[in-house]
Structure formats: structure tokens, C-alpha cells
Image (cartoon, rainbow, N blue to C red; front, top):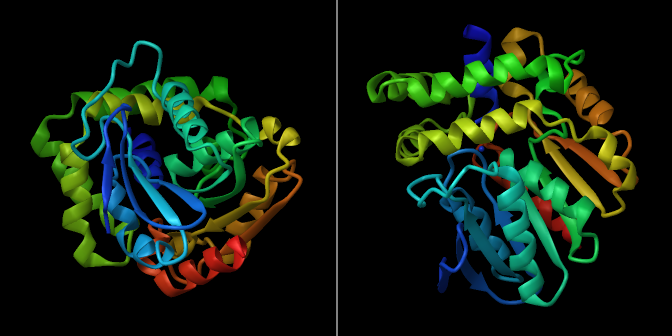
Length: 285
């Protein structure tokens, strides 16, 4: 149970128009080439607020909030979560009738990676923020999708069946591992408490048992991976060791650049905002 909780903790991922025809919410601002920003597990699109304030000066930014997260209505989970959302985002991009750039954080980064690989005609570049092709291998390099099923089921059950008070306490206690910006912690907890627990549980279950590493041998789209390591510095992690893990997981991708944030925890966009924006803008140029 303790290992499951730690794994779950480490996963946790200017508006002018609003679109509601999809299961996800989309808010659009700015003008220019299109960037789609996808938040992580249980996060609102508001996580990108400061990022979009800058990027919308030169780009049209579509900021998503995924179904079941941060107050967005949940969808039927009969056919799973990630495959359905991925398909809907791909359809959304097709309707824009132009190639787009993706920026995804955590779970949103995993979706962005899949979309960039499976729809190269739709995605010109993708920026993956602290996300892996196989999350479970980030904790245990020897992990396989099959061996992770029992732990994934246990983690899902823990999330779904915790009473609200215990769940809120768990979220509050875990958030200092997610961001150095203490003023943001109440917002993260609020988003988590407003999220549909069944959706969160299903999403984390699918992430834990999905190994996408071998699929990257077909990935041609330019990818920038921004990694975080600083939350684990007291446990022996270094920028070098964590970058090595990223390099191992992304080794089959043809055109990938990996950069490590200086002192950020999981929410790099909040903890090292100047570095984060500079990396994005340089890559997009």
C-alpha cells in the first residue's frame, strides 16, 4: 500500500472562447500558430495560466481540461480512459485543419507522446513535461506491464474507495513532493477533490500498466522532454541519474531532446517558470 501511494504521488499532473462539444473542456486565446496544452492527472487547464499568458502573444493556445478532472464532468469508463480521450483530442485537432504543436504535463505528456507518434500529419512538434513512455519503469527499471497489474489494481482501489477526509489528507500531505510553490498546494488539493475519483483511479491504472517504449521506434516528430529530479534529491536522485532514466526510456525515438529543470519538482511550469518558458520558446523556434 505504501509503495502504491508513493507511485501515485509521483504521477500527480486569458480566455476568449470556450468549446464544450467534447468530453474535455477547451479554452482558446491568442493568435498565430496553434499550440494545444494538456494538463496532467486531476489538474485543471488553469495549470497553464502563466505559460499561456506568454505563449498567446505569438500563438493561438487551446487549453484543455480532461473529462472527470478538476470539476469537468466525467465520461463513461466502460472502454477505458486514455484511449478514448486520445481519440477525441485527435478528432479535435483534425477539425482545426492545420498541424499543431502539443505541450503536455504528466498524463497530458503521455497523451501528447502517443498523439505525436500516431498522428505525425497532425502534430509538428511536442513538448513532454515530466512524463515517461512507461511510468512504472521510472520507479522500477525492471518493471513490466504484466507485473504491474496487481499494484495498479491496488492503487486504483485505494483512490476510489478512500473516504473524502482520508483522500484529502493524503493529497495535502503529498503535494510538497509535487511543487516547491507552497502557495499552489491548496489549488492542487482543490482540483483533486473536485475530480471524479473513478476517473482518476482508472487513469492511473492505465498509466501504470501501459508500456509505450517500443512504440517509439516509429516516432519521427521532434520531441522536447523536460524532466524534474529535485523532489528526489534527499533520496539519492541527481539530475544526471534521472536524465539517464529519461534517455533510456526515450532511446528509440528518432528526434528527441531531453533537458532537466534546475530545481523544479513535478510542476516545472510553476517551480522554474523562466527556465520553462525559455526552453519551450527556443524549441518552438
